[in-house]
Length: 433
Image 1: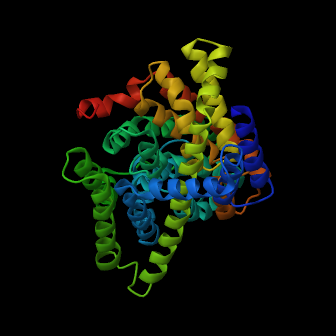
Image 2: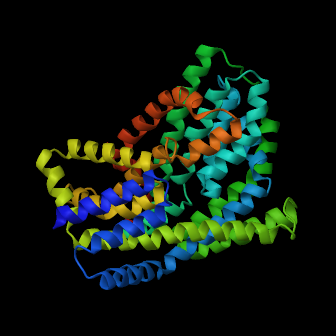
Image 3: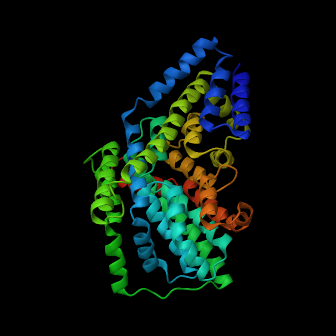
């Protein structure tokens, strides 16, 4: 029975995704059809509806719409250019200076907005004409923007980490947020190393080193944006407010700066921005709700146990098992967006990694790191599509320069996977684990 349920569920799901059915509907149809093998039709539909409602009835999920709205306000609020100027003062002296500025600015903007696509659009859209003017290869510049915009999904605040905390259960969102800092920085540094080598070989221009006065000026201009990270994450870590309350603080903070101080957003624009955020929230929460139903169906059919027995039957080496899980997640990331992938595969892999002695917090960072790479790959890589659209290059043109950047990301993934200290040191320092 387990094999039949798994076969129907995943076959229907991948067929529907392949023919272009929206992923939330693909998950729902695949779940209901597979449950027809276990229950009468009306019972299966009723269970899925109940599980969707129960999955969304969680106070922690309220943080997602607030962080999405805060990110939308930041994206329209003139924050990108201030972060770019600050990044240029910090790393503009390195070979291929504008590419390093792109990576650094994406790390900062992504960390503040929590959105890879917003970072790719805001930072890439600002830097792309400058890079073309200075003679940078357009596909390479686009590849750097695409590969680096996902770093902000590891560096908090991150909606996908909140979703993982909900599914895994018993994990502090604050601990997960802190756990993502060092892996996110490792990804960014790995990309900068590879970019620097390529830029030096190609003789890309180097900007002059910023003076102390210029560095201090750009830091002062970017400080209000950077303070958001300190206020929100600091407040969550030190118990001043919860992650949900912190997301509301982020909205208020960005609203004040964008509307009243920077004056880059007018009151007339607010309804449109709120509507955009509402649509994005609806998409995310629909995925969350329907994926909870699929997770329940898989658990009820013992699919996680079957997968666990299969993997453990191949090898009993923890090193090889984690390598195999990483390979599977990398493949999953190629075909599936982050949120549904986290919702579907977390209950499958958690029992396996727990048997290996790997705690849920560390595995959460490993999973998100894997799926970040998937956002840069076709056919469903949203970061890839946005980056190519902004730069005006075709996907087939950008794929080759992406290969060495993929290698850098995977090298960082291996470090994070096999050195748990990198994920745990900050949560442990603040006594959150």
